Image (cartoon, rainbow, N blue to C red):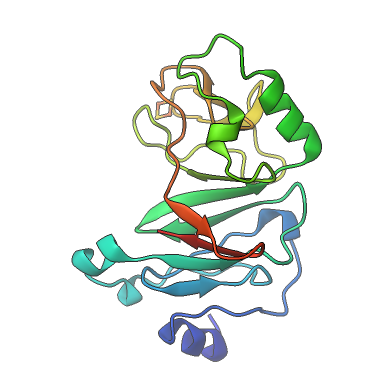
Length: 189
Ligand code: FES
């Protein structure tokens, strides 16, 4: 981590870096607390010593700048110690999810209830079976038969709405509380 980014982290605000590689595979780690994650940042290593105590984490929220996240891109950030997947879905992915709203599912839920704004799917990236982090955030990773996420631990498959479609997981990927403060300003928590 650079001296500059360390300073930003201390202020609990993450700003753009000049790294543009792997734009489809952005991986963000926001420190818990009222942090801000900017879309232009590339890879932000988790800095354990900056984690606050559990009681602070329980109340914490993070602000995410969505500007610059391209359609078809998935990013991962950390909120209250959990990975959160943000997927800026393509029209095709949205259509796939909605076409399956009436399908026979393990945990039925219409897509409209899964994504407040259809283009933005925001889920907790923890498999609801036994807690593994599913694959599918990085380009080239397995996403399963429904194009969402694939849990390599025991084979659960999630669709483009994060709904469980096959495997031992008992329910859909959980949704974190979130609010769109503006079109490009998301608050999680
Ligand atoms: Fe994901 Fe078991 S933990 S399928």
